[in-house]
View (cartoon, chains in turn cyan, green):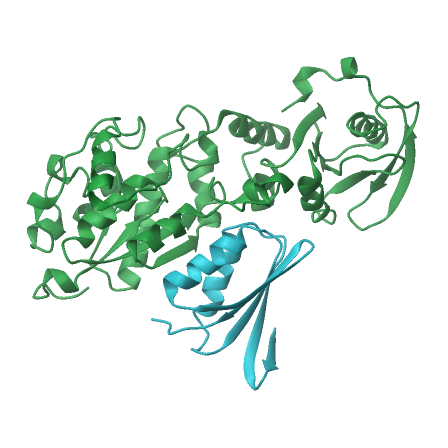
Length: 84
Length: 353
């Protein structure tokens, strides 16, 4: 799903009910086709993502903008870095 | 592939990174020779690194890290995690070299992964691939006799370098071409971990994952027995990803050959199983507190009463005369039935899968 946030395009990726590492894999695969500076919002229910998605982002040069946790759902916002 | 005039410091290698110490060391040995290394990690559906740690509530306070990602970060390399779960089915269902002690097709698995890594390597213009294998480290897949089998059957041939035991094996392309110095590679063999631990010390790796039965659920006897039960009940060797995830969750009881119950053991599993209520017939305790249960198979009317009595046994109403159980179809239609919970002596141990 694509939307506009502060003039920037933001994609939403639903990985709810998927278990790690699938949320990481889905995040990786969608970011491959995104441009530097674009934002991705990942919805998750597996708490493993709190470690895994930031680790994957650090390795690959993407920026975590926020991690919000409410009840059983976690929303992670990522700004895409330079894909190489 | 790049031409052979390139020097070692612009050669690129892709490493199979499991998250364990051996692949971590293998990468560092090659990095030390000026080679650019990136990691690859395959999701087969059976990886211990994922899944159940995320389901149980007690594990939520300290989410377990993914060791492959952690290792990649320590090494300063990129890690590509690839979902091979669909293609991997053929490895599990039809292993050419058979299974190990449980349903672990280790030799076929290694060949499959090296082949998949080689495909990735070619697609991304890398020069060779490496693994953390050590001769004699594992009884099925890491023996001197099987290493050439993996190289050959994967199609990798001499593109595959095993830095930790390379001196005990024939030269590979990377050594022959001078991309890596064979003298700086190693000659580890056997099950002892001491050489690896000494090398970890040398590299300053203070922390690393300790192997505890491998990185695959198929090496686990209890898990394998649940998978074998699934195949027997279905009359054929098949599975979907949801099936193999479910084998890691809850108590599994098979009161009749044509259906089994998956009963949550705690709140985290209850919430997880709720997410599958559109995929399975499900049961909920209405009159008391109790676990969510899913039914896999085709129970008839009488079977549902038996299932409800069994589920009621695991509720807080286990000593009550009657417990109300909601039976919900996949389409959301439901009805309540009142049942007397089974006594513990009415549940044969053979029902536990």
